Amino acid sequence: MIELVSAERCIGCNLCVKVCPTNVFDKTEHEPVIARQSDCQTCFICEAYCPADALYVSPYADEQIAVDEAELAGNGVLGSWRATIGWGPGRTKLAALDKTPFIDRILPARTIRAAGVSDVRTPTTG
Image (cartoon, rainbow, N blue to C red; front, side, top):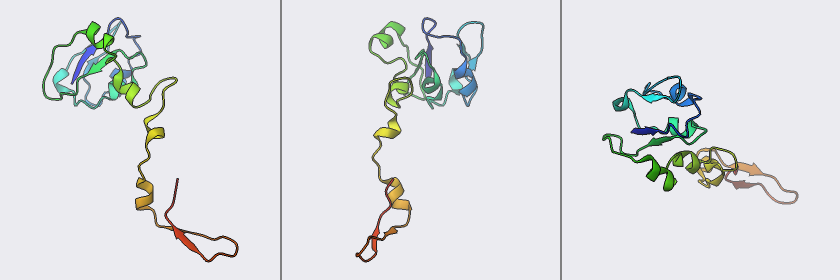
C-alpha cells in the first residue's frame, strides 16, 4: 500500500497521479497527496514511474503501516522498486538480466540448414 510521498524528494511532476490505475493521489501545487490510500492495489506503478525516488509503497497490501522517511531513505528503500526493475539512468534493466527460456517453450522448433549436413531441428533462441 502506498505509504509515503517525500516532500523533500518530490519534484512535482505528477507522474504518480497520471499512472495510478486506482486514482489514489490528488494533484496539488506541490507534491501529490495520498487521498485514497485504501484504494491502493500495491501495484508499485507509481513508485516505478517516480523519477525522483520520492515514493514508498509498502508490500503489505491490506494494512497501513507507520513509516519514517529518514529511516526509509537511510536504508535505501525509497524508490527501491524502481532500482530493482532497472528504471533510471545507469541502471541495468530487469529484462536484461532475465535468462528465462520462456520463448523457447512456446515457439516451434526451427530448421537450421548447414552445408553438407542434414536438417537439424533446434529450439529457437532469442
